[in-house]
Image 1: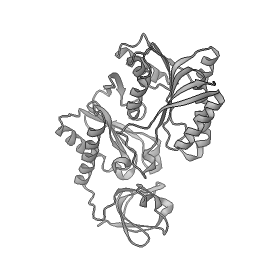
Image 2: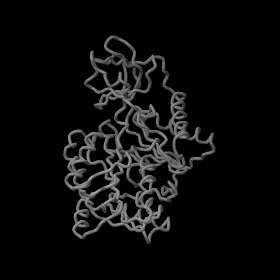
Image 3: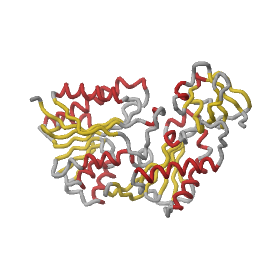
Image 4: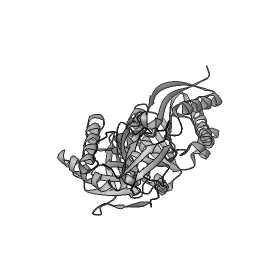
Length: 400
């Protein structure tokens, strides 16, 4: 059915056979037939057994990304609409959809594309050549499916400006897909109002994956003194404030993020109890400790310290340092919320790093709960790249 057939080497494709979505360049024995990078090809095992179809890009180490395991799959507009309908139906059943991630790449069987919904605006991030050809079809299918539920999308913005596109031989791009609109979008999450900058904010404009985790931490903050590190646009800090925290300090190294956080505090009438400071967290935490500051709740939500396996060791040092410093700032019996959003910081290593930090800080940790990303960022088992966020809440106890 397809113009080209990719055959795997004998003994390769183990991840694919276990349910994964990717085939790397060193797993391929041959490619027979005519094709261009980005085309859909048939994938066969070394013995000729059909393993499905996906799109190919020889410029990428991830040479194949699978679209279907079915031998007779037809990849067309109807196929894409079915994928979109499945993704929307799943989210309707699992999360508040006022603002959420609608498409999460491999976990929604649409590898290489992310679509976030902020109120009535969609933000698209296309990261692979093969899916880039289908992004218009996917967006139109989303508009159609949402309209059937009475949801009108007033605009679509593309944020395909991540560096990873360069590894696919693609340019980094951003801009309107369709008619221009005001790119400052107000959303409400957990009862907190935010202004989301879909044009210039980080990633697609706002981190939706921590929605449920923010609510969980907020429940611990009533009447408390709270420190929120790496606050970005203030989301954990504002959840703490809305939950009735006595005082909240949010810290971020980006002046732009801090200004946006302050605007969000004003939007919620929290500027008197929730304040923000532009500072390097690694420098600030030791200074607060020297000043004798102590907090009832400390939140550590850093950016990914590693985006490759090669830098995991250095990343672990960073996580160990901030957790040690953070624990020292928690009052005896207070709480620490700490996380890693790096896929390469594996759960076992992250837990080990936290244990080492607790030993260095001479603190005992009582685990309240362990969480991951929200269900609109589903974890597809066997597609390891879909599991990235590890989130712990601990009670911190002094030596007794």
